[in-house]
Length: 77
Image (cartoon, rainbow, N blue to C red; front, side):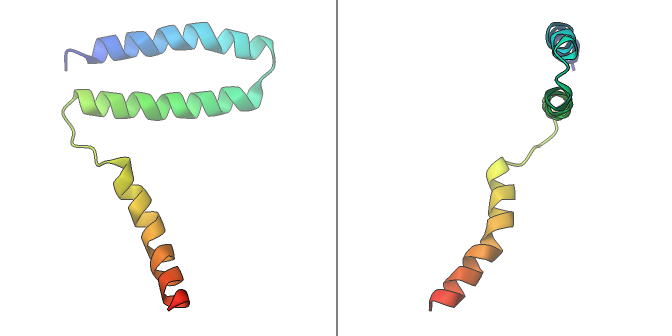
């Protein structure tokens, strides 16, 4: 809980540095992807700071690719 102000302070600093430059250069797509990834990273970091149990990204990758691997294995045998 004590880490949350530091997380949001770091995010605010990143936004104050990066967003004006992107807006000046009219980088709309980059600004959109920057915003989405920053929001995702901030929410994951805040959840971890609050003590939430987060699964490994490998679990999600396995969930997505396991059916494809099984299908290929059936096709090969």
